[in-house]
Every structure is written in structure tokens, then in C-alpha cells.
Length: 283
Image 1 (tube, rainbow, N blue to C red):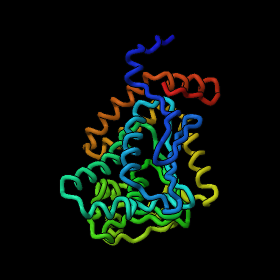
Image 2 (cartoon, rainbow, N blue to C red):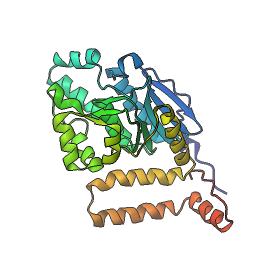
Image 3 (cartoon, rainbow, N blue to C red):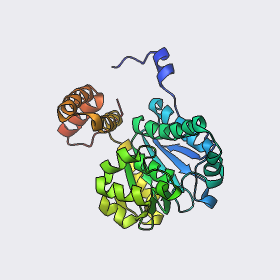
């Protein structure tokens, strides 16, 4: 029998988020799946300074949230996210000096960092408009479900900015390839849903009315799996971008040895012997 976790250690490293009350988007946790809904449908769910910061902080805190195993990100009203709000972000940025502009761009980049280092797999459910920072949030997720009518655009070039925003030049080529990423980042054109699936940006397409249910079904499947091991998989997928093959093989050897110490590994073996489906508990 396992010894109970030291209360002091638990207090500093367990932060349940099921009861978190979001201020600038919707947040709900059900059966271990946390759902973020960008909820300004009248403007196609644009981001503000406040929502950027709150999203950053939520993904940061997910590192300690043992009651959340998987995250779904979606948008209300038939669109995912139209990017930074023209009136609440784009306009004010014109009048800022370099230190404040760098503060903003570092904040937006920190959101991507927190999405990549939180241990929970993130599934983006993308319908309709997915542009600018919305496309970056989709890109930064671990998996993407789309619809045929979705339109994804890394449109920074179209507003006089470089395509190298929030990690796009590093991450997008790894998802769809260098040439295709270059086309999207140089032109800012929209990537349709069916083309996005062919290019590998979307894992698969759903009908609009089934999109969120399909995303939650995938999230539930992941949540029912070995969540500790899934977190290790996400960590290695992210960290191995900067490793040689030799370094990656050694890192994976160490990671897999750690997973072999988990009780979930033993549960899987005993279930196999008994010809049953394992019931994972994330430890």
C-alpha cells in the first residue's frame, strides 16, 4: 500500500482547478476534462490583454492540477478565435514604446510556452474563423479537430508584421512542413478545413454540430488512459525538438524507465493477463 503524500508537499504541488472561476473566458471541468471556451461570439472571440494573461496563468497552473487530465479549447458561436481584438489590442499597440511592446510580445509568447509545458494533452476544436493569435493557439495545441468550413490564417504579414510570431516559425514547419508553413506565413492566406486536413494541420474533420462532442470524446479517451505517462509523452515530444537522435533515445530510455515504476504499468499487465481492459488511475 502506498504511503499518503506528505501534506506539506501536497500543499505546494497540488492545485485543483475544477472550481476555478475564469473571468475572461469560460472554464469547466467534467470527468477530468477541462474545457476553455473563448466566449465573445459577437466579435468572433478575439483576445484582449486580460484574456491573454488569464490564459497564460491558467495553463501555468495546470502543471499542478491533478483533477484535470486533458484540456479542450474551443470558441463560441461557430468561430474559434479571430486573434487579437482590433480595438482593445491592435489600436493601443500603435501608441506604445519599445519596452511596453516587448512586454506584450513576451506575454503572448509565454502563453505558448505554458501550453507546451503543461502536462495535459490539449485538443483544439476549431470551427469557422481561426486567425492570428487564434491560429497560434490552435498550432500550440497537441491535436486539432476542424470542420470543412474552418478558415485558419496566420495573417501577421497582412497587417505589416513578420510571420515569426509566438513561435510560428519554429512550430508550424514541424506540423505541416517548411514549404507549406512558408506559404502561410509569407502570404497570410486562409487554410481551408479540407486542405488543412490534407496538410496535416488537422488530425481530422468533424461536422460542425458534432465538433465539440468529438473533441470531448477524444479527450475522454485520453483521460481514461495513463495520464502520468501521457504527460511524459508530451514532455518528450516537446523537448526532443532540440535533441540529437542519440540524445533523444537516451532521454526516452530514462523517461520510459520512470513510467515502468508507475502502478498504471502494473495495472496494464495484470489486466492483460486477466483479458480485461486496464483501468488507469494516473499513478
